[in-house]
Length: 181
Image (cartoon, rainbow, N blue to C red):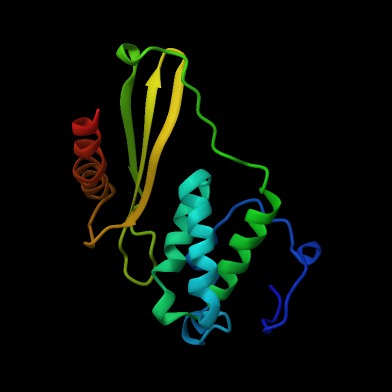
């Protein structure tokens, strides 16, 4: 990763990366202790990427939400995460979310998928819930929404993490979609 300065970098100087996020274990303790250079501009950058993620790039929601949680305590690790996210977004700029509808309404169903990590945040040992909702039919697949949310409790097992994710999925996404449909 480059040494950060407040000068601009051209897109040609961005390295290719295959994934949008970096594991917490890749950082040293100093990365978490030292203040990041991009902190004053981070909110502005992240909100622009959030618009993209919510519209058509669900694949970047997790690293983006991890960065958004750190906005008030920005550190060097956050600088490195943001650089990685920008590089990934640059090299995958042709990726886009696609949906198609080829069935009448009576053959469609709302399907909601959920998953959870287990203690993926090294600092707090909290898990993350992921939710994906889509309209599905024999010739239909239309993404409706995706959510990436840090869980509010520290859990003791992967099973507990999955149960909390299912509860969040049903309350936050499932019930409102059923009442809407």
